[in-house]
Length: 195
Image (cartoon, rainbow, N blue to C red):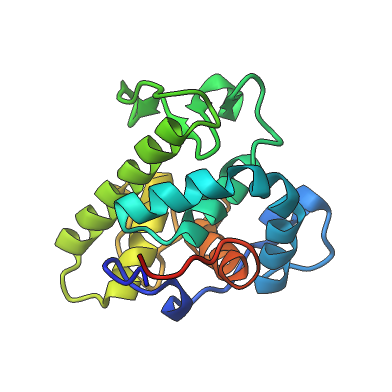
């Protein structure tokens, strides 16, 4: 069980915002919208399941969370152009930004859908979870995990409180949407046992 960084099933999540749910022209938002979008991406996600499981095992990150970030960031590759998204500023399934705070920061590792890319991006996620753990030592493991997910999108300098963890994230719902998608993948698609 992946509890070193917290249990994804114990993380509170309100799901996708109305703005995010508009990607799929859904007439609703919240957890239901997040679950619908995760399900929409599930067929494409199956191609990456073994890579996701290996990287999850190696990094101590729940594979369902990796799948959820892939779903949110690239719709399991569906919105990428030659592996690039965000107007050519981010690479791969998990959208590693080539610029971080305006500086050249990350170089692409591996092909856009490779295990190397997933390992790099998951390493970045772990980095931000640890930054949030240090910044907010009194938060529970699950709160730190959620804060780390928000920081993966917006940087740890933009996470100021748990109550407004998504205040600076894309759509103002990034961690809430990703967590809701992760719970869906954990129940339905990406659910591996203890190693």
